[in-house]
Image (cartoon, rainbow, N blue to C red):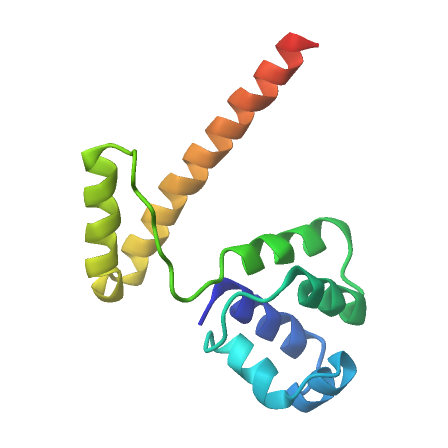
Length: 133
């Protein structure tokens, strides 16, 4: 299952929609919607994400979050480490080899570290923009 698929399923169920009802509203097949929810389809297009948001009445921050999850939901990832450090290449390869056997708590911990680094970089970037104004 992908992050987008899991969130889409959660929202659909929260709103009391069946797979068939939502698929009909989006003018797609129930099989395609099911495949998206279960991560058997690749990353959805931005156009599809916008259609989902419009159909479900999702706006602002929630729509932005769904777009972000869609961008992070390609089930077959390729990491290009050309030009990066040997440690970055090792990390990418080791993650590729071990991700399927990592316990959920380890995955959650790694994601938390990455989220913290992303937030720190964004804060620094924002501070740099403020200094230049």
